[in-house]
Image (cartoon, rainbow, N blue to C red; front, side, top):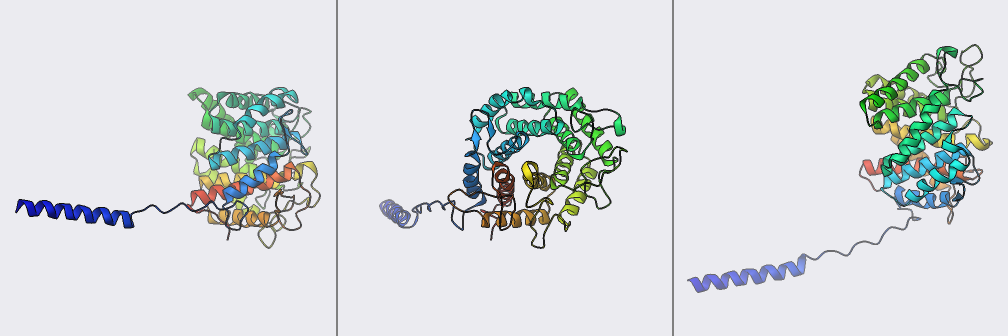
Length: 379
């Protein structure tokens, strides 16, 4: 009886081993999908476009050829957002180089324009989030201190656009709000957090009552000499930086009304016939001739719309990003994969500014696809 049991066990083990060999093999991994194929993910597509963006990067200056000082800060932010979304660390050396080399142009990233300073502060906060290197956070804190010196009682508050102190406008104050809120979230001490949060709340209280937000819930360019809305253009980046700043302030303050305010501005933007065409594509009012500044605006809007969507997801925002990402990619041609000013054919002029602006959309599409557990958003 014992002998029979032993042989039964051996027979079972033999049969199990044979079955394992026949049926339990590991399939060979599938070949990587080429980044330029129709089924490539947004991450792969972004990588191709990032390579093109970096072809304009100048190691000597730490800036991007074919575009300006503040645009280079935005290009660096695009690079940082790509790194954050994909988990890449391949551009850490670019961040270090720019922190050093670009100060040959403006030491401490301080110049005559408070909005320029705000763009650089946001870029360094993004770099800090990726690297956790304190030198980036310290750079942003130093820049913010200079921006805060631009606040006075003219028009009951707010910071000036430039150190000439002749114009109080939306973008400088929106950036002041955003930088203050982001520093409040990242502050290392209770005291510094309280200081940054106080500035952010003070800015929003002033801005929301300044008159720059018009009856259509869109933000005009600034205030006139009588401290009233000057009714100048509702640039896309004015809408974007406001909603991004509110989303960040919500993280610091947990006041749900801030998200409600941001959603109102975002919805007004996506409903505007002057900014959105019948196909759902975002346009700048200056197209097709936007000069060196307007070419950057749309990407800034989408980047900040993503920030709002991360704080409070909305399917309409994700559909909008998907639609624009597909339209941008449809116009990209190998081997350069350059993106122009206009996000629908014909795409128009191409430079580092237009490339980084459109890349903001592809990076946003990458972030959403990863968050939703899909390889890509495109159809």
